[in-house]
Image (cartoon, rainbow, N blue to C red; front, side, top):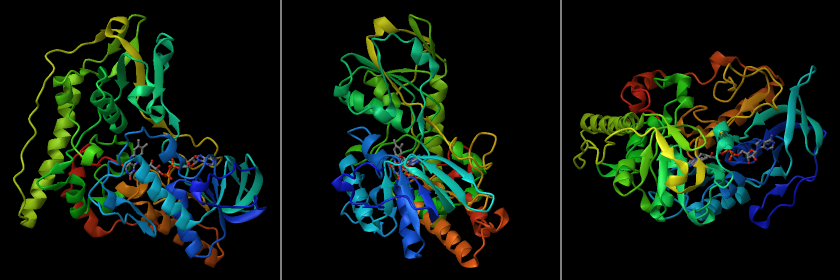
Length: 463
Ligand SMILES: Cc1cc2nc3c(=O)[nH]c(=O)nc-3n(C[C@H](O)[C@H](O)[C@H](O)COP(=O)(O)OP(=O)(O)OC[C@H]3O[C@@H](n4cnc5c(N)ncnc54)[C@H](O)[C@@H]3O)c2cc1C
């Protein structure tokens, strides 16, 4: 049976599992609730199944000092756009939770919390058998809105580190005080790694950072947030088909930048000047020495190339549009490693904790439907799979940059809900075929050439 619902969530808890339902929505995050918003408007019977509590990832998988990386105006959940007085600010964790609580109350979705979907399998006679921790039922349609970040990745080398070293994944990191005294090794410099390294650095902790190949971007450039410029350049409306990397963009690492304290760049070279120790990508541990790739210089240079590339694309846009904006410029490195350091003596370094910030692996093993590609990612066009009645929502670049974020989920959820409604009224379960969905507007192709994504890895903004 579902777990009791914390008062703050204000969900309409469905009383019990039905025998049959039109639409089963797996996941009660922002994607699942957005879909419920539109299904309710269309009068389509559905149930949302959430194995924890609704929007729990925002509550339980973010560190205490977390701020949105995307500006508040991009919080565009359906029927619940950001309404505060700081559209260009960046909500802190508590404010995000308040914003989500408002959304949850507004949507009033039929949710069963504490229910894990364990298997979905197509029925010979149509529809899907849905097996859950609370019982089984049949659904005509299943929408997988289970998020894009499932299993925290921790490399096997972690097993070789001494038991005295505390190890956590970024999803479980909370604050500097929760770690034992001593130096901290942060492994990975993507969105989470760079921000967590900054959090520790600002708290006065000695930080060793194993820098990966994440790109970075400026927070502000030529008088505006870079996100605002990219919005004006229509980057956020560009469908994945029009992106120069096509579906390959889904594998891109997010750019590192922060919304903390009103927003600023994250410049690892500046941190190095202030005492943070930068290394290349972590490679192993031999019992005494941590081993690193000798690619620190290359990684820092590449991140700066992306940073400057995005700014150049903004320069071109400003020039072409005849916009009067403050002068721009090129970032010049404020620190460069004199040499690469492949080894670090663990005991001598004083490292007492390691934070693994190397991402998550998807887990769709419970979906017993042949809908995945060679890398285990679902094949779909705009969330609609070739298997009638099966849909995905909330994945990075499902349709646009904002698909896995607050900014684009409403558009995707409305599209999938409308598609389901069409299927319902036609009384048919057949998918219209991949070609008929999400055709790229011709103009978008041209538009893409002028956008920062025209060069690989200069593509996505952080988020
Ligand atoms: C560190 C970090 C920072 C981010 N910063 C930003 C930002 O600044 N701005 C922005 O717009 N976006 C940001 N995002 C991205 C995005 O907004 C979040 O990932 C968001 O949580 C995605 O919502 P979702 O509903 O698609 O997935 P999730 O929030 O992951 O929700 C999926 C839900 O499905 C449930 N579930 C999974 N499997 C099952 C199952 N088998 N049965 C039942 N329930 C299941 C899970 O418990 C979960 O509650 C960030 C993401 C991360 C990780």
